[in-house]
Image 1 (spheres, helix red, strand yellow):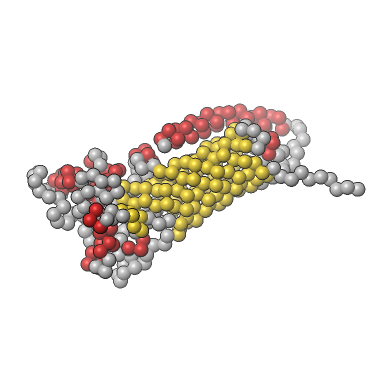
Image 2 (cartoon, helix red, strand yellow; image 1 turned 180 degrees about the vertical axis):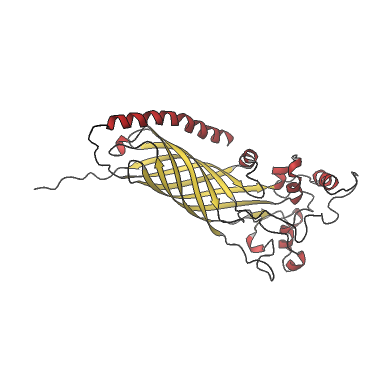
Length: 337
């Protein structure tokens, strides 16, 4: 997947130079000449690519690690209407898997010891419906047959996303994937707490891409786009630790709310003892004794009222390779006289 992003980036960088040359040629050829009216056309596309999540479990402040550590997949289909030589509108459907894991992200990284001890993780299959406007830096000719060989573009729009974060239960509860929102892991929906967060939210997609003309009816494009969401709960982490006594009606909610005392990382396994012990010695002043059990009692900073998340909206990045098919407009014949 890292190779996919590097390939897309290289494709875009190399294409911009070629597109700049085409733009100069296009401007020069139009000087003093007749410019025929542009004929709008449409295209459909199917794409596959990668997805990366940014939030409490993968901070954007460490972009390289957050982008590549738990990169996952996405698939998409879209319809584009080209209105002018440089402006088009697109509607797209995307299914993207987002993943975050404190243990995976922080293991062996001392500056992320807090994340290691927190030990949260999630998986979220996001369904996205996006409406975006696209600006092409190289204007097209009079119709789809005269589009440029290489066309760089940028886009901006609005999206609606449906999501449902899940996580694995502890080993002694079956290690099964369960939906987190109905549990109210931060007390949501209980007296004295916030209402449950919505599993439908909005996002702002923005990014850039490069389209390459294969032949008269087919294009291939490479694209990278961020999604700034209006939710801090794509990962089910956003507030403070709830009082476990307020969740006695649901033992699963208690277990999924605070996972700092689990000896084994739930998502993929792995003994957490050494890392938790190091945190307690270096950050909390415990004696440097390899015999003490770090999970024997609640850990300071991971109990009721302490921050569980950061309170900022989550983001994600999608990269795609699209195969585009041009829907040729019907030929308009002059009326018979």
